[in-house]
Image 1: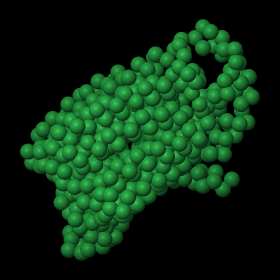
Image 2: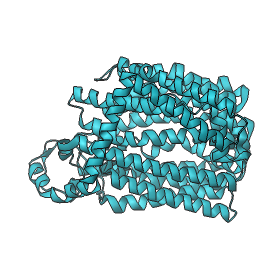
Image 3: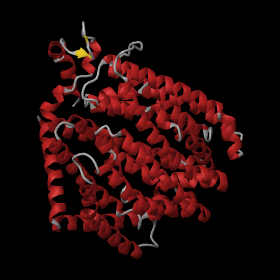
Image 4: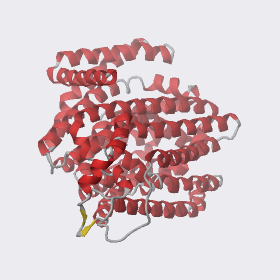
Length: 532
């Protein structure tokens, strides 16, 4: 994939320049072709879109798998070097910052990837908007550091907040470079950037923890990861912004980005309120337990969906003018995600305790019930994430904003209902409300416009739901016979049996078997491409 991208950016410069020489920007003819234009053209991607999609998916999945292993190793090591309170202090600050994370992007990376045609001037303007918003957010968070410490009654949070505030500016200066690499479907380079920066952060965090820096090890890991990503993105992308310019027709992209950002802000405010409430009413140790249980489950799911999201959003954006092809491509990916996620998440509920003890260690046993409660939400998290592609790739920023408001109201209401019952009760309330209220609401809004309908989305749930039920029940029954065994033994014995029962069901049920065969065909095609 990297080689093919390189040939595009080098070998096709002349043809791109010739074909775009007469192109106009609004009503003004362009007098010269900027060398940065080679980072913007996507017409050549349609010639072998299937091949690029398969190769990109493989590269991105391999990247996310590597990142997952690095994160898992980091969690396992740091959980044994640091205390729940250390993680709680870090989580208190990142929870507050999480309300503002979307301002690092401001929805403008999606605007860059989603647009059919875009100019160097427009991307440069988006870059400077990103940097400006990131700088303002950095100053705002730094100014709020005493307020954060006051709210949690923890003076040590002032220094942590001040240091972490700088990550907003660093990340904002990276957004458009990564977006252009994704637009060009140069996923190999994106993968390298994220893996190397994550490795740098992990090594920094572990090293500082070994030296006795406590919660500052988590802060150092975060800052190092963001800084290395910035340097690599600028070096590898090769794109350089020009100074801001007028009359570049950037306003409609800013409007789209503003809708995405507003929706993400509302969602983040609601989603991050759980750590905020637990920290306020139950203390740092409770936040540490709750946040680690949440991350232990949600991060693997995010790293499962992230590579597919990274590949499918550019692909679907290129297919906006071909509704049938758009629908077919989306549903194939959606059903494949349903098959894989239901097969794997069926193991989570019955094996929550041994997973928690094996990954985090015996000091974290109180996190196991919280982890089990989140397993209810895990049922549909990947499919919910896939449904949001419809808003992004169809330019439906207003729909996304409206749904975010409704979904956030549901989330906050679930927290209020569960808070009197502690962290476990809050996790259960959130999961149940999301599954039975949030998902139907999302599917209604996502499917009411465009080639993919609400009925299409529900079909993916009900067609593969029996797979989750079978895996969960079989794993639970086997686990009952080994409940007194060592946690690692429980995992080694029960997980394979549960997966085997799921694979047997896939073989028996024709729609599931058809999806599995399609995945096998894609894998075989990928292997053939690698061998060539």
